[in-house]
Length: 559
Image 1: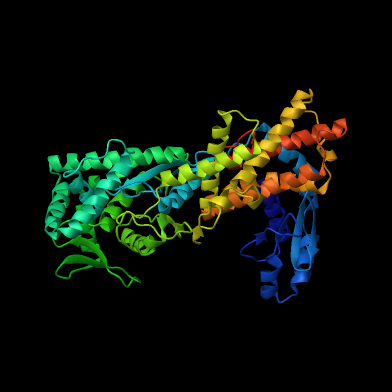
Image 2: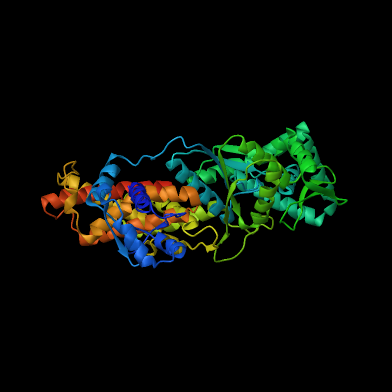
């Protein structure tokens, strides 16, 4: 409902500003009002009048007769403050009871590429932030009414894969290991052998040339290694509640001729030179040249990426790439090169890396903590917490709740911080309810479910006949306003692609619900207040469940 409230504010403000020339209504969130406008500041500079005087003039010209969701508006110095009406509060609860459906549908197709780890071993903690940010954004955009396709772009042409394929020709994958871990063992062993015997490097390079050329036997060898690894990766992603719609192979763009077409077009349209070893493309405003082809005729990741994005652009209205910080230059080069090809650039979500307190990771050297190990460890920790707090649960329920809490904690902590900030993942912090992470939000949902179960056991059910006007306590009003902002938040993240705002909202909503529960008796209230408060509890349950779903986190009914 907050979106509708904001729309009404915009409508009446435009009417009040009829005699002014302005560029923006400058509507902002405020601690002192439900919403505010700072437009008087910019108008004061144009009209050489005090902003306070202009704010008062605007308020005097607001068409109060058109207020529905607005209760009243006041000039507070240079600010114009708007407040919600009782009707807004009632409509918020009613709209939640009727179902939280997207306000718009069929808004176009979006392709999000995320995760896209090399197929040389299992996902590790360094990949998890990419995967979870991408998945949360996909969920947000679906909720906002877009047709979303998630893609995993498989680098099947790089040197790492060639090393793994070469190694697989010399040693078998361990049958007793998860597939992607078995591939990693072969890759690590092959790297060590190549370091000791550099004469074998020619065989690796020969594999790369044959694969690009489409040699059938080589293609089959590659497919075996890549598909083996991806089988294990998909299992890990499934445990994290993540599913990709499409796995796209880089090699297809080479063998189809799409990469050659890109190189030829760039040679015609761009500033390209041969430096003796490779073809280089100079891009305006970027010091480092883009290598578009090696001297031996083989392609590079960036050139294949251009072909991939051209292909994607013809399949959607909007492209989003989730990249690590190490791809920042690549994203700038990609944008400039795509412009030369008359292809729209993707939107980028660039994230800083995540680490454990123990330090850095390297798959090549065999120093890494896989996502599987991390998942196992956090689920074990979560089980210990469940066992400590709920010894009344049976041995079926305990691990079930532990999985929900463990995966929830992992996902939440990967997305709760702005993507542009580095994070250190800490097990204890993630699972600590007092730290107000995922377990705190999940516990609030479980508490709402518990209240409703207790009411049903007493024969008291949430009723369609209730009086929302009875909900006048500060904690009740603030909770309703917070509930109203769910769709408003979804709309905002759809534009700014900042998924940490979803996590922040989930935590704040849980805090407001707990404050309400602390100060307002529900089951022990008089009959009319009990009816209204049970409706509020049920609405809180619905929105908590929905925001957890957007975060890809299960909403347990008991904890």
